[in-house]
Image (tube, rainbow, N blue to C red):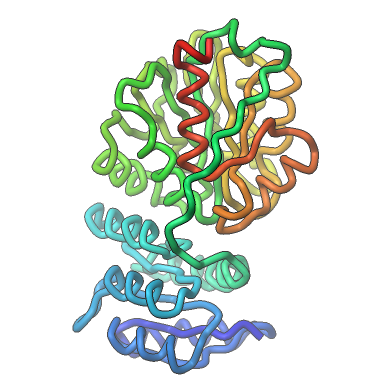
Length: 346
């Protein structure tokens, strides 16, 4: 059984969440806390497998509670946040940077409660086995990047395409935080995330990084120093000369729209020698087909390593299928990319 601790200052909200889990056979609620301080103590006392936590609470809010839980007893945390409040969404992503693994919408109407009834148990199952230890890691050894017979040294990297799922927001923030401010490339990103949080993710990255971070718009050209995120409900594709295209009509791939595969397959088809593809932490195999196609077309392909991945699913499958040239933690991935567009890498 997956043991869950519910944390919310509203008794009625906790009661509804408990009803969701009563319908499952593999999840049980082992405790309830009405503020963040209680949550920290109950994590120590009850040792739950997953914490489901609101952000806005008395005594100690969800952001501070997340930080303390990750210090005293690292535990997978699912944050509930309003999608209507952009400041609260940014706080949710900051909580993810401190250790929370997923963010889901705090319901504001009946349809939202029905959606959460379906998504919350599945999210709890996903994060229950995720890596949660947060500690300073030794600097990664910088290994030479395979060059496929010197091909990478002959071509100038112009774009980096990144795909991620569970644990991705913090990993992407860590990677981009190591990228030089004058990087001569543009970044396009597909992050699996609950619908409605894409704008909050973009706002958070834009505040944290020295780059122009926004949701992608159809027909814009991805320029150097720009970071563009796929909006909800549309596949994001890269065409020749860096033009971005949004496709809300093609069906989801492996249950995802946007899908990492759609983005990377477009890179492989239209501009493989100018793109580096990066597949980061997440469950499943979305992105593996596209990354392999990009590698076979002559593109640069990298993956996040197991030690730094919250869920070593997508990167693991990519490495097993020979879709990635190298696996490194996020900051080392950034340094590897920087070498490719530096003078020494060309």
